[in-house]
Length: 378
Image (cartoon, helix red, strand yellow):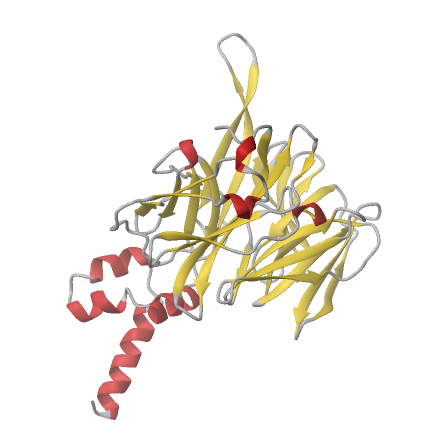
Protein backbone atom coordinates (compact mmCIF):
# COMPACT_ATOMS: atom_id res chain seq x y z
CA UNK A 1 0.00 0.00 0.00
CA UNK A 2 1.35 3.41 -0.98
CA UNK A 3 1.41 6.32 1.45
CA UNK A 4 -1.41 7.99 -0.51
CA UNK A 5 -3.57 4.85 -0.30
CA UNK A 6 -2.87 4.51 3.39
CA UNK A 7 -3.74 8.17 3.97
CA UNK A 8 -6.99 7.72 2.03
CA UNK A 9 -7.93 4.62 4.06
CA UNK A 10 -7.19 6.36 7.38
CA UNK A 11 -9.25 9.36 6.27
CA UNK A 12 -12.21 7.14 5.35
CA UNK A 13 -12.01 5.36 8.71
CA UNK A 14 -11.86 8.72 10.51
CA UNK A 15 -14.97 9.91 8.68
CA UNK A 16 -16.87 6.67 9.30
CA UNK A 17 -16.05 6.79 13.02
CA UNK A 18 -17.98 10.07 13.31
CA UNK A 19 -21.22 8.79 11.79
CA UNK A 20 -24.35 7.57 13.63
CA UNK A 21 -24.78 3.86 14.29
CA UNK A 22 -27.86 3.77 12.07
CA UNK A 23 -25.80 4.93 9.08
CA UNK A 24 -22.99 2.46 9.75
CA UNK A 25 -25.45 -0.43 9.94
CA UNK A 26 -26.67 0.51 6.47
CA UNK A 27 -23.09 0.78 5.17
CA UNK A 28 -22.25 -2.81 6.20
CA UNK A 29 -23.70 -4.04 2.91
CA UNK A 30 -21.45 -1.79 0.78
CA UNK A 31 -18.41 -4.05 0.98
CA UNK A 32 -17.02 -6.88 3.10
CA UNK A 33 -14.10 -4.81 4.35
CA UNK A 34 -16.43 -2.19 5.86
CA UNK A 35 -18.58 -4.89 7.43
CA UNK A 36 -15.47 -6.42 9.03
CA UNK A 37 -14.20 -2.98 10.08
CA UNK A 38 -17.35 -2.17 12.05
CA UNK A 39 -16.89 -5.35 14.12
CA UNK A 40 -13.31 -4.63 15.18
CA UNK A 41 -12.68 -3.56 18.76
CA UNK A 42 -10.37 -0.72 17.77
CA UNK A 43 -12.98 0.79 15.43
CA UNK A 44 -15.77 0.34 18.00
CA UNK A 45 -13.63 2.18 20.57
CA UNK A 46 -12.73 4.85 18.03
CA UNK A 47 -16.40 5.35 17.20
CA UNK A 48 -17.26 5.70 20.90
CA UNK A 49 -14.64 8.44 21.22
CA UNK A 50 -15.36 10.25 17.94
CA UNK A 51 -19.14 10.13 17.59
CA UNK A 52 -20.34 12.71 20.12
CA UNK A 53 -23.92 11.64 20.66
CA UNK A 54 -24.26 11.83 24.44
CA UNK A 55 -27.92 11.90 25.43
CA UNK A 56 -29.89 11.82 28.64
CA UNK A 57 -31.98 8.95 29.96
CA UNK A 58 -34.17 9.61 32.97
CA UNK A 59 -35.98 7.18 35.27
CA UNK A 60 -38.86 8.79 37.13
CA UNK A 61 -42.26 8.15 38.69
CA UNK A 62 -45.63 9.57 37.75
CA UNK A 63 -48.81 9.29 39.73
CA UNK A 64 -51.40 7.25 37.85
CA UNK A 65 -55.07 7.46 38.77
CA UNK A 66 -56.74 4.06 38.92
CA UNK A 67 -60.37 3.25 38.12
CA UNK A 68 -61.27 3.21 41.84
CA UNK A 69 -60.08 6.82 42.32
CA UNK A 70 -56.86 5.60 43.93
CA UNK A 71 -53.39 6.73 42.83
CA UNK A 72 -50.24 4.68 42.52
CA UNK A 73 -46.76 5.46 41.13
CA UNK A 74 -45.96 4.52 37.54
CA UNK A 75 -42.25 3.84 36.86
CA UNK A 76 -41.11 5.32 33.54
CA UNK A 77 -37.86 5.29 31.58
CA UNK A 78 -37.44 7.86 28.80
CA UNK A 79 -34.80 9.30 26.51
CA UNK A 80 -34.25 12.95 25.55
CA UNK A 81 -33.45 12.55 21.78
CA UNK A 82 -31.97 16.06 21.54
CA UNK A 83 -28.42 15.89 22.91
CA UNK A 84 -28.37 19.68 23.43
CA UNK A 85 -31.52 19.45 25.58
CA UNK A 86 -32.97 22.37 23.62
CA UNK A 87 -35.93 20.24 22.57
CA UNK A 88 -37.27 18.69 25.79
CA UNK A 89 -39.56 16.12 24.17
CA UNK A 90 -39.20 12.59 25.54
CA UNK A 91 -39.04 9.20 23.84
CA UNK A 92 -40.11 6.11 25.77
CA UNK A 93 -37.58 3.28 26.03
CA UNK A 94 -39.28 -0.03 25.27
CA UNK A 95 -37.27 -2.96 26.58
CA UNK A 96 -37.16 -6.09 24.39
CA UNK A 97 -37.97 -8.12 27.53
CA UNK A 98 -39.55 -7.24 30.85
CA UNK A 99 -37.30 -6.63 33.78
CA UNK A 100 -35.24 -4.23 35.84
CA UNK A 101 -33.10 -1.99 33.64
CA UNK A 102 -29.44 -1.42 34.48
CA UNK A 103 -26.98 0.81 32.69
CA UNK A 104 -26.49 1.89 30.00
CA UNK A 105 -22.78 1.15 29.79
CA UNK A 106 -21.37 2.45 26.49
CA UNK A 107 -24.75 1.91 24.88
CA UNK A 108 -25.38 -1.51 26.45
CA UNK A 109 -28.31 -2.08 28.81
CA UNK A 110 -28.48 -4.93 31.31
CA UNK A 111 -32.01 -6.23 31.92
CA UNK A 112 -32.72 -8.40 34.98
CA UNK A 113 -35.81 -10.44 34.14
CA UNK A 114 -37.82 -13.26 35.67
CA UNK A 115 -36.19 -16.50 36.82
CA UNK A 116 -32.79 -14.80 37.24
CA UNK A 117 -32.48 -14.31 33.49
CA UNK A 118 -30.17 -11.49 32.37
CA UNK A 119 -30.32 -9.91 28.92
CA UNK A 120 -27.75 -7.59 27.35
CA UNK A 121 -29.36 -5.16 24.93
CA UNK A 122 -27.85 -2.70 22.46
CA UNK A 123 -30.66 -0.27 21.70
CA UNK A 124 -28.88 1.32 18.72
CA UNK A 125 -28.20 -1.93 16.84
CA UNK A 126 -31.39 -3.62 18.15
CA UNK A 127 -29.32 -6.65 19.17
CA UNK A 128 -29.87 -8.55 22.40
CA UNK A 129 -28.43 -11.61 24.07
CA UNK A 130 -29.91 -13.73 26.85
CA UNK A 131 -27.01 -14.73 29.08
CA UNK A 132 -26.39 -18.20 30.49
CA UNK A 133 -28.28 -18.50 33.73
CA UNK A 134 -26.26 -17.40 36.73
CA UNK A 135 -28.36 -19.13 39.39
CA UNK A 136 -27.75 -18.90 43.10
CA UNK A 137 -28.93 -21.66 45.43
CA UNK A 138 -29.06 -20.06 48.86
CA UNK A 139 -29.46 -21.72 52.25
CA UNK A 140 -32.60 -21.21 54.28
CA UNK A 141 -33.44 -17.70 55.44
CA UNK A 142 -31.10 -16.13 52.90
CA UNK A 143 -31.96 -13.33 50.48
CA UNK A 144 -30.09 -10.93 48.21
CA UNK A 145 -29.47 -7.74 50.19
CA UNK A 146 -28.33 -5.86 47.08
CA UNK A 147 -26.71 -6.45 43.73
CA UNK A 148 -24.27 -4.21 41.87
CA UNK A 149 -23.38 -4.37 38.20
CA UNK A 150 -20.60 -3.20 35.92
CA UNK A 151 -19.89 -3.59 32.22
CA UNK A 152 -16.94 -2.63 30.07
CA UNK A 153 -14.03 -3.59 27.86
CA UNK A 154 -11.15 -5.62 29.24
CA UNK A 155 -8.21 -3.87 27.53
CA UNK A 156 -5.95 -6.88 28.04
CA UNK A 157 -8.15 -9.39 26.20
CA UNK A 158 -10.30 -6.92 24.18
CA UNK A 159 -13.30 -8.78 25.55
CA UNK A 160 -16.40 -7.19 27.03
CA UNK A 161 -17.30 -8.33 30.53
CA UNK A 162 -20.28 -8.01 32.86
CA UNK A 163 -19.60 -7.96 36.62
CA UNK A 164 -22.21 -8.92 39.23
CA UNK A 165 -21.71 -8.42 42.97
CA UNK A 166 -24.26 -10.14 45.22
CA UNK A 167 -24.44 -9.13 48.88
CA UNK A 168 -26.35 -11.77 50.89
CA UNK A 169 -28.52 -11.25 53.96
CA UNK A 170 -29.09 -13.85 56.70
CA UNK A 171 -32.74 -13.34 57.62
CA UNK A 172 -32.55 -15.66 60.63
CA UNK A 173 -29.60 -13.85 62.24
CA UNK A 174 -30.60 -10.46 60.81
CA UNK A 175 -27.15 -9.62 59.46
CA UNK A 176 -25.01 -9.78 56.34
CA UNK A 177 -23.05 -12.83 55.34
CA UNK A 178 -19.37 -12.20 55.75
CA UNK A 179 -18.48 -12.39 52.05
CA UNK A 180 -20.12 -11.06 48.89
CA UNK A 181 -20.22 -13.21 45.79
CA UNK A 182 -18.68 -11.92 42.54
CA UNK A 183 -19.45 -13.36 39.10
CA UNK A 184 -17.94 -12.20 35.79
CA UNK A 185 -19.49 -12.89 32.41
CA UNK A 186 -17.37 -12.93 29.23
CA UNK A 187 -19.08 -11.88 26.02
CA UNK A 188 -16.59 -13.74 23.81
CA UNK A 189 -16.95 -17.11 25.57
CA UNK A 190 -20.60 -16.68 26.62
CA UNK A 191 -19.80 -18.06 30.06
CA UNK A 192 -19.61 -17.08 33.73
CA UNK A 193 -16.57 -17.25 35.97
CA UNK A 194 -16.48 -16.77 39.72
CA UNK A 195 -13.91 -14.46 41.27
CA UNK A 196 -12.41 -13.93 44.69
CA UNK A 197 -14.98 -12.47 47.06
CA UNK A 198 -14.53 -9.64 49.52
CA UNK A 199 -15.94 -9.00 52.99
CA UNK A 200 -19.37 -7.53 52.35
CA UNK A 201 -19.95 -6.64 56.01
CA UNK A 202 -17.07 -4.17 55.68
CA UNK A 203 -18.95 -2.07 53.08
CA UNK A 204 -22.44 -0.73 52.62
CA UNK A 205 -23.22 -0.92 48.88
CA UNK A 206 -26.97 -0.42 48.87
CA UNK A 207 -27.77 2.11 46.14
CA UNK A 208 -24.51 1.50 44.24
CA UNK A 209 -26.37 -0.52 41.61
CA UNK A 210 -24.63 0.81 38.49
CA UNK A 211 -20.91 1.36 38.09
CA UNK A 212 -18.88 4.08 36.43
CA UNK A 213 -16.57 2.68 33.75
CA UNK A 214 -13.30 4.29 32.69
CA UNK A 215 -10.29 2.81 30.85
CA UNK A 216 -10.88 -0.85 31.70
CA UNK A 217 -11.97 -0.31 35.32
CA UNK A 218 -15.43 -0.34 36.94
CA UNK A 219 -16.04 1.90 39.96
CA UNK A 220 -18.77 1.81 42.61
CA UNK A 221 -19.40 4.40 45.30
CA UNK A 222 -19.79 2.68 48.66
CA UNK A 223 -19.16 3.48 52.31
CA UNK A 224 -17.60 1.85 55.34
CA UNK A 225 -20.18 0.31 57.65
CA UNK A 226 -18.37 1.26 60.85
CA UNK A 227 -18.04 5.03 60.23
CA UNK A 228 -20.26 5.86 57.18
CA UNK A 229 -17.29 7.44 55.41
CA UNK A 230 -17.42 7.09 51.63
CA UNK A 231 -15.09 4.77 49.74
CA UNK A 232 -14.80 3.88 46.05
CA UNK A 233 -14.46 0.22 45.09
CA UNK A 234 -12.69 -0.42 41.80
CA UNK A 235 -12.58 -3.63 39.78
CA UNK A 236 -10.00 -3.99 37.01
CA UNK A 237 -11.56 -6.01 34.20
CA UNK A 238 -8.12 -7.26 33.11
CA UNK A 239 -6.67 -8.79 36.28
CA UNK A 240 -10.12 -8.97 37.99
CA UNK A 241 -8.88 -7.51 41.28
CA UNK A 242 -10.79 -5.21 43.68
CA UNK A 243 -9.16 -2.15 45.22
CA UNK A 244 -10.21 0.60 47.61
CA UNK A 245 -9.97 4.27 46.67
CA UNK A 246 -10.54 6.67 49.53
CA UNK A 247 -12.46 9.80 48.65
CA UNK A 248 -11.21 13.20 49.81
CA UNK A 249 -12.22 13.52 53.44
CA UNK A 250 -14.70 16.35 53.89
CA UNK A 251 -16.88 16.11 57.02
CA UNK A 252 -20.65 16.04 56.61
CA UNK A 253 -20.55 16.06 52.83
CA UNK A 254 -23.50 14.00 51.65
CA UNK A 255 -24.84 12.92 49.28
CA UNK A 256 -21.96 12.18 46.93
CA UNK A 257 -22.13 11.54 43.18
CA UNK A 258 -19.49 9.54 41.31
CA UNK A 259 -18.91 10.33 37.64
CA UNK A 260 -16.53 11.30 34.82
CA UNK A 261 -15.16 14.83 34.35
CA UNK A 262 -12.90 15.52 31.34
CA UNK A 263 -12.07 11.79 31.09
CA UNK A 264 -11.13 11.57 34.77
CA UNK A 265 -12.87 10.00 37.74
CA UNK A 266 -14.65 12.69 39.74
CA UNK A 267 -16.84 13.26 42.78
CA UNK A 268 -19.55 15.80 43.42
CA UNK A 269 -19.73 16.48 47.16
CA UNK A 270 -22.75 18.26 48.59
CA UNK A 271 -22.69 20.32 51.79
CA UNK A 272 -26.28 19.80 52.87
CA UNK A 273 -26.73 22.72 55.24
CA UNK A 274 -25.21 25.51 53.15
CA UNK A 275 -26.16 24.01 49.73
CA UNK A 276 -22.59 24.36 48.49
CA UNK A 277 -20.98 21.83 46.14
CA UNK A 278 -17.41 20.75 45.46
CA UNK A 279 -16.21 18.89 42.37
CA UNK A 280 -13.09 16.77 42.98
CA UNK A 281 -11.14 15.14 40.14
CA UNK A 282 -8.65 12.30 40.42
CA UNK A 283 -5.34 13.06 38.71
CA UNK A 284 -2.36 10.70 39.00
CA UNK A 285 -4.05 8.86 41.91
CA UNK A 286 -4.53 12.11 43.84
CA UNK A 287 -7.75 14.06 44.44
CA UNK A 288 -7.71 17.69 43.25
CA UNK A 289 -10.54 20.12 43.98
CA UNK A 290 -11.70 21.35 40.58
CA UNK A 291 -14.57 23.67 41.50
CA UNK A 292 -16.50 25.04 44.47
CA UNK A 293 -20.07 26.10 43.71
CA UNK A 294 -23.03 27.63 45.46
CA UNK A 295 -25.10 28.27 47.27
CA UNK A 296 -27.70 26.69 44.96
CA UNK A 297 -31.03 27.60 46.50
CA UNK A 298 -34.02 25.32 46.10
CA UNK A 299 -31.95 22.19 45.47
CA UNK A 300 -32.83 18.97 47.28
CA UNK A 301 -30.11 16.62 46.03
CA UNK A 302 -27.64 16.20 43.13
CA UNK A 303 -28.37 13.38 40.66
CA UNK A 304 -25.47 12.98 38.25
CA UNK A 305 -23.04 14.56 35.80
CA UNK A 306 -23.70 15.84 32.28
CA UNK A 307 -21.21 17.44 29.85
CA UNK A 308 -18.38 19.87 30.69
CA UNK A 309 -18.92 19.62 34.43
CA UNK A 310 -22.67 20.38 34.34
CA UNK A 311 -24.79 18.26 36.65
CA UNK A 312 -28.43 17.42 37.28
CA UNK A 313 -30.24 18.18 40.54
CA UNK A 314 -33.63 17.42 42.04
CA UNK A 315 -35.28 20.60 43.30
CA UNK A 316 -37.28 21.05 46.49
CA UNK A 317 -40.43 21.45 44.37
CA UNK A 318 -39.73 18.12 42.57
CA UNK A 319 -38.34 19.56 39.31
CA UNK A 320 -35.51 18.07 37.25
CA UNK A 321 -32.90 20.82 36.80
CA UNK A 322 -29.55 21.11 35.04
CA UNK A 323 -26.88 23.39 36.51
CA UNK A 324 -23.98 24.61 34.35
CA UNK A 325 -21.06 25.83 36.51
CA UNK A 326 -19.48 27.56 33.51
CA UNK A 327 -22.44 29.91 32.97
CA UNK A 328 -23.86 29.55 36.51
CA UNK A 329 -27.27 28.96 34.95
CA UNK A 330 -29.96 26.58 36.20
CA UNK A 331 -32.25 25.09 33.54
CA UNK A 332 -35.64 23.52 34.09
CA UNK A 333 -35.95 20.33 31.99
CA UNK A 334 -39.73 20.33 32.12
CA UNK A 335 -40.34 17.26 34.28
CA UNK A 336 -41.67 16.95 37.83
CA UNK A 337 -41.55 13.83 39.99
CA UNK A 338 -40.91 12.83 43.58
CA UNK A 339 -38.12 10.55 42.31
CA UNK A 340 -35.53 10.89 39.53
CA UNK A 341 -32.43 9.00 38.45
CA UNK A 342 -30.37 10.11 35.45
CA UNK A 343 -28.14 8.10 33.13
CA UNK A 344 -25.90 8.98 30.20
CA UNK A 345 -26.58 7.17 26.92
CA UNK A 346 -24.13 6.91 24.04
CA UNK A 347 -24.80 4.84 20.94
CA UNK A 348 -22.25 2.12 20.27
CA UNK A 349 -21.46 -0.67 17.82
CA UNK A 350 -20.72 -3.23 20.56
CA UNK A 351 -22.01 -6.58 19.31
CA UNK A 352 -24.20 -8.54 21.70
CA UNK A 353 -25.95 -10.72 19.15
CA UNK A 354 -26.66 -14.15 20.56
CA UNK A 355 -25.09 -16.98 18.60
CA UNK A 356 -24.06 -19.57 21.18
CA UNK A 357 -26.01 -22.25 23.00
CA UNK A 358 -27.06 -21.33 26.52
CA UNK A 359 -25.95 -23.25 29.58
CA UNK A 360 -26.96 -22.89 33.21
CA UNK A 361 -24.37 -22.39 35.95
CA UNK A 362 -24.74 -22.67 39.71
CA UNK A 363 -22.63 -20.65 42.12
CA UNK A 364 -20.25 -22.98 43.98
CA UNK A 365 -21.10 -23.34 47.65
CA UNK A 366 -17.59 -22.68 48.92
CA UNK A 367 -17.71 -19.24 47.32
CA UNK A 368 -20.86 -18.36 49.22
CA UNK A 369 -19.26 -19.14 52.57
CA UNK A 370 -22.26 -21.25 53.66
CA UNK A 371 -23.00 -24.96 54.09
CA UNK A 372 -25.02 -26.95 51.61
CA UNK A 373 -26.49 -29.18 54.32
CA UNK A 374 -28.61 -26.24 55.50
CA UNK A 375 -29.91 -25.50 52.02
CA UNK A 376 -33.30 -25.43 50.46
CA UNK A 377 -34.52 -23.92 47.20
CA UNK A 378 -35.51 -20.25 47.43
